[in-house]
Image (cartoon, rainbow, N blue to C red; front, top):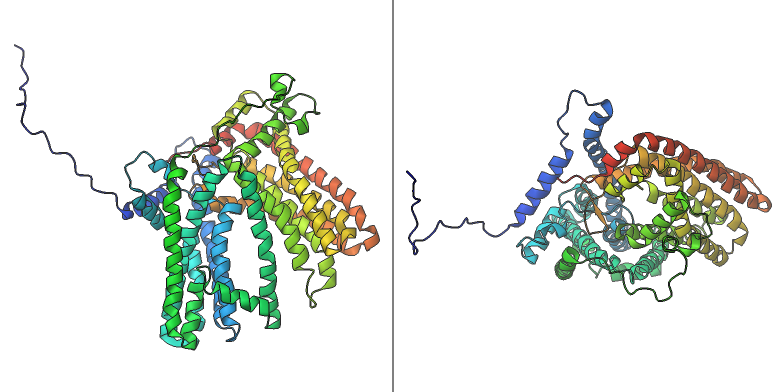
Length: 578
């Protein structure tokens, strides 16, 4: 006997909908903490796991602990700097405090753009399809951004001003110093998020990437004279230019929160509240800017292919994909990989963001070293003459840092290289040459201009030799680190995104590679210091030979390792969703 289901009357009310409520800001903080905890939790171990797999499960926790220890060291150094600024003389204290605070804010803005990237554990693109209001999303992501090592380090460092404020101004001035540190921290986090959100959208457009990189480099160059004024102020105890700039900075959001306690010490209490309000106003303006740019960062797409070229090459279609600068090379795997790397550096948003770092190393470092160590009546003349040489030593090592995690940007696409059996040495050599082609012409131009303007043209051959040697050594070191310790990049449309904890991993690997590069380049720098000026040109061929030898040796060793560890490298660079 069939059972006839009982039908509901047509006008009977159905079950009540589930009340979900509006999303709260606390949800973002809890989500950030949950993702951070899951990323540090080791996976479930199996009996047949090797020691390498067991160590890999604990690598994130180890890197997080090392990052925390490095952060404590940085917090201690920053605390000492701000404490010294608060204990300076009365006529130096406001200027040094303004410059110190402005340096912290600018570091929060430019360091994520130039080096480490932004921790995008809560990527805005992941909320694009969710009914989350933009004000709630911005406020929640801002609150979640305070969870991490960098905000804690910044707060501990800037609290150093409480020492001088408490000793010279009492409890009231100390409380003002604490409020200024809190407002300054909010300004740093808001500025970093707002700028990276807007800049990420700019880098998706191929038409503005060159202009953006140029602006970053020019801003970096313009900071060098300001730093020289601060050094002159500290050394000689007086500098009219530094005092004027410090006075201006003390009434801008960059330095106003950090100078408020100085007014409290001096008894100018009517000026304390306006300076704190200037910092709060800066936070409000940055949040408003972020509110208007976060939508494009969430749903914006990369620039389209554009119009087809009217005068395309008449060569074969495959040959047309090879840039003209390397078409003289014979066809083969090396040429194809080199062409691929050149195109990816110019078209991939994440790699275009790394080009900003290379541009800064190629232009800013030679100018900063040359004019920073060569000016002033109290400077060491011999140190000033060798500034160009040592600047290219640092610049060459910095350019090689772009290859520390050269497989991370490929992700699962690296499987195609495994299926086609690309030799490891060919793979690494093509990647290193592509980075050199894009950066060294600009590095040579920057070094040449710096040598002409500083009057040290005779030291240019030695400087180029040391720079090429440093780059070659860094290429060999980066090849080994990229094979032995690769890590995945986040699946995000933000070119500055970094997985939680991966900023510390990148910083640690970069530090190890740069330290090895400096140690192996030290004999060449010692030879420059011992040789007479008439024989310094010999460092050019010596540097090229020594750098090429180390690069060849490192690439050969890393290539052999890659042949055996290709599956492990692919598994390590494959993004894993939390």
